[in-house]
Length: 177
Image 1 (cartoon, helix red, strand yellow):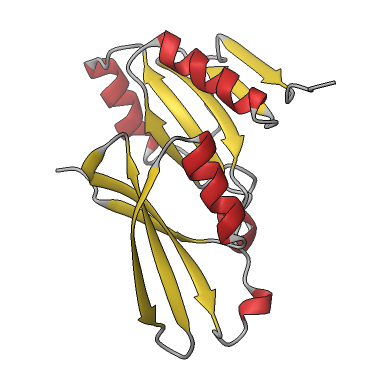
Image 2 (cartoon, helix red, strand yellow; image 1 turned 90 degrees about the vertical axis):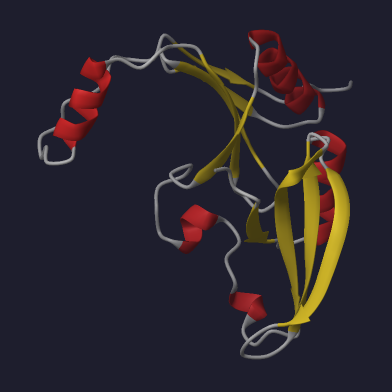
């Protein structure tokens, strides 16, 4: 079973649209306009991911909703969590595809963090709402030992870190001077 869509609120729908359609390459295919419980109304925009009519990311533009001026659109700020705790990750199938996303993001003027986690390799940036977006390539396999450690950590109360990442690198936005 997969997921159908992830729905998030957008602070600036035009900036969000530019990011997800022009930079990410997702296609806006549908909008639903509906009343919001408690007052106001919203436009719910659906972006098709990679041409797959069963996978979407969606954004709400809220209008006339009481208290809208106080909404926090960054998931981690809203939940009072450290940056990037809540994030969303999209899969890639090759290292070349992962590198292409890193290049696409820096060329678009975005900062990128790359981490080789030893079992997956990721690149991260932020969307216009302040949320961390990731592309991830699974590079390892999972063993019974991995599962046993994961289950044991459910009850662990002491810090027992995983091995350090094989690579952590920051890429600044490209400049067009």
